[in-house]
Image (cartoon, rainbow, N blue to C red; front, top):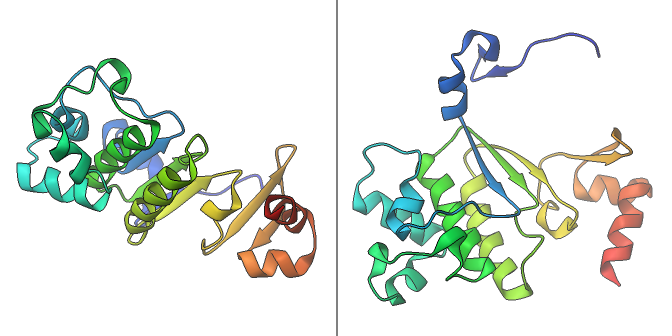
Length: 186
């Protein structure tokens, strides 16, 4: 394909101001970006006029509220430089709470669970599933458990899409995706 348009809710992205385009996109990366500030300020970063109730609801959906409330000053607790006072799973859940609060039309998940232990991955995956329900999500993942419920999976190999389909369709094809799946089942 050498041409075409990218539309978001029927609007060509070329017709959007860059700030408007950025407001439509949220992301959760492999390495959560946190600041030497409070839980509250880290969750509300990039969102103007958020109420405490909205922040708490986002944290609950992200499975973060309980550990925040167990901290010394609750939502006013400083997380340390780059979230150094938190575990990897806790940092990811704060990043997810930020994305939930932003409520973007498009969500990009870039290896959002790859660096987590099994229990943290389970909690983060639960939060991500709630976040993905009402929006277009692009998930970049090596762990197939992260994407197996996707409406469509595009399998990349050496920079090209080599297969597309649902998890079950790709398993039935018996190609590259099935080989990856089989290796991860060991």
